[in-house]
Image (tube, rainbow, N blue to C red; front, side):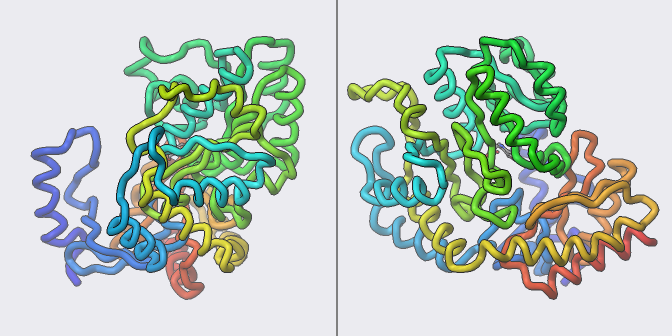
Length: 411
Ligand SMILES: Cc1ncc(COP(=O)(O)O)c(C=O)c1O
């Protein structure tokens, strides 16, 4: 155990300072720590300090850091066949994954594009909507985050990410306030050129904003009315994060296209774009030259990881989202009474504590880290503490972490 960040963590920042783009890692005397290893909901840094992780590393470690079944599946696949050919000779495990994921997704007659990152999954969804509608314009939400590639920047709802690159990204996107169905209807009714509305069921990076019941149903009807596809970006909310396999099932709607990633691979980079057959079949049949593919599409280790993640979720882990929600909402009543707290909101294992300012969130993050709890900020202003623990977190660890946050907020 050492001061935080300890000497090893601090020393490890030197190569980052010297050799990583300075845009990537924020480094100060108090931040960050270098992660060395992790298990379940616990992370250990390079100095041997142990932390309760309430980030799941951007929501990825839903089935737990270094989940032994996922690690074993990746290791076995790495020994047998770590890589095959995305759009030429497929790995046999890709066939297994496609069948399983199609059924797991709940999308009837699902057909799938596999990819490596969330942004790629969203871009494949955008291309699919263009193919299916013959249109090229998109509508998205203010505050929405869908990745940072050029295609996804065109639909991003966070201005600062677009601003430096605006001359190279789509400028005809229609944006409307998240959660406000009337605003969406006002912006889009009467249009005939929208390929898709793209939306997160719960705005994650935008501040953990949970829309009112009926919002997604309303967007579903609006899409039907204007002949647009409904693309649900469940890259954060999918794979058990909100207490069900996918957040869309809370509203009993079926999206036209579903984007998943993050938790899907349990730490291995794999993502997917899932659509009903009649939509995906708007793409031409491959004649030996795929119009959309990539080197690592359907990477066998990613397929093995995703199969193991679905096994873990189906073996009872999914219900943990609701148990976690009970604990956080119970503690949230006390936390919400603290002076700096504006709101506590969330669903399943995805919660936000909105404070008065980003500075307060930064202070809370640093204080929690000193006491062994890892947090992340979210919200366009950075004024929300995001809580997205691994689903495997123990009740004790969760209670301890929430008490540490509350201690800081009442101080
Ligand atoms: C809702 C949502 N969509 C897309 C992305 C982009 O995923 P990736 O960073 O894997 O490209 C993210 C990442 O945070 C996300 O939260």
